[in-house]
Length: 548
Length: 68
Ligand SMILES: Cc1cc2nc3c(=O)[nH]c(=O)nc-3n(C[C@H](O)[C@H](O)[C@H](O)COP(=O)(O)OP(=O)(O)OC[C@H]3O[C@@H](n4cnc5c(N)ncnc54)[C@H](O)[C@@H]3O)c2cc1C
Image (cartoon, rainbow over all chains, first blue to last red; front, side, top):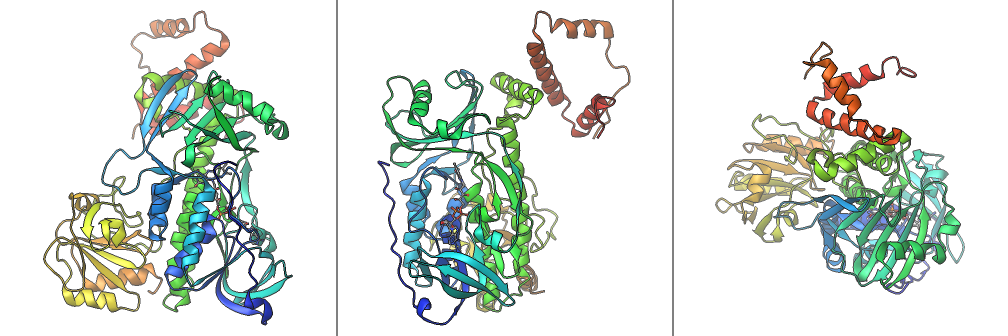
């Protein structure tokens, strides 16, 4: 590869290897994107974490490239969002072509007033490198490379691990084990568990090429283009003038043959024209699967990321949903470890994230079925949709080249306190209990965006001086603290005061003077009221932490 | 939510039938299949009502192949 050299993270002997089995509150298996996010999030909550990875570097080759707005917001909270955005390329617009013509164009973020675009594209190795850098800044993270977990045995209140290293194996005890060890998840196998689903009978050549090009920074998807008849092609821009091209090959393609440059080059020439100058950075042939584990929590072993669920890349729902897993898990586990919430709070992780995984699996399966029709008639309907889409708006909604990752609205979550006031909006995008918090431009002590002021701990977003100073202090000083973030209104000692720069916070939250919205540490709405009532807020926090 | 109307509703059934067959004139089977698919999609969007569409799909499938 020309544009990237994998860093080597040296193996360092841990003092644990010279002591008896040392016990740690949390061990994370896997320093992929999701394991690293889990560790950073927990460390930010003050929880010490050991991270074990069998490798000594970040991901190699063509993997994730598209990070969705919500994942970027989570990565902002973890302190790496800006680096990813600066290095990557942002985009909102996609185009879909059918044969030789544009079928339609879509904009995934048609409104202004959000810090992050719909997507930023960046090679997975860069993302992981930034996460490793961030993890290294945090004293509570003990990141151990060349450390392969070869045995995991649940033993009542802890999990016993055998870790293989260049110096030989050692034993570790974990109060909690977070398995982020990827789609093949050795930990899952060690526990005799399964991830069930389907393999799609299709193959894709994925090529990353280095090229100077005037293609715009958009997602371009072709169905049945003249340069690759009968199959689909996807083009994405990445950092450093690297472009990702996915060629659908069909099930009968020979993966070994298709990987050879003499097979790849003509495909690229046909697409990019005889004069295009490019170099292949990496190329591989994939088949895709959609599956998940029945439950993501097994006692003291918790699964996240690809270990828990696997989707086809159309929709970019893999890493993006994994970040939402750890976003959901970290604050809950931190409360359980601090003795401030019962263990069953972790069952809500399972409930919320299996629900989200099903949504992702459904979307990803539908997209894959559209892209790879399973029968002649479904191919006919697909082509009919694409033909109609050129001319008729209604058909564009049926074209499915991947429903791109949006966060799950956890409307059915057991942690929600249902609306008591009937006049709150409930339509799409409304801040109903369970919804991920909408961003808005503000002026405040932590920055220029609303989300900078939410998350990490509970927050009560109050429109106007809805909360008396005494109650602000009581909420902040409670066992499970909640900070009051006040939008406009008079001065209230103790409250974080922000100004609604463009009136968009009020609009997006339907905030009138007096409205208060309770947000969880992962920036999901837990409850909302038209007027502040200390008892109800305390009850909602208790409910959202299984303390009732 | 509505109910699928299976009572006579076409003002001139013979005219419509002739038009329908005419729409396939000079087409290969494959092209005809495409025209039919487009027609289904256009009409489905016009109907819109998910219940009516579900009833129409069930009525169309009735008696054809294994029943579900
Ligand atoms: C072609 C392609 C395109 C994709 N595009 C996108 C996209 O655009 N957007 C998106 O969000 N997602 C995308 N994905 C999915 C994304 O790559 C994955 O969802 C993501 O890598 C999952 O991260 P993870 O940390 O769960 O697992 P992994 O990245 O697989 O990391 C697992 C880690 O565990 C370690 N490990 C494994 N076993 C052990 C063991 N026994 N002991 C210690 N360590 C162990 C491994 O070394 C590895 O570092 C794509 C995937 C592919 C293949």
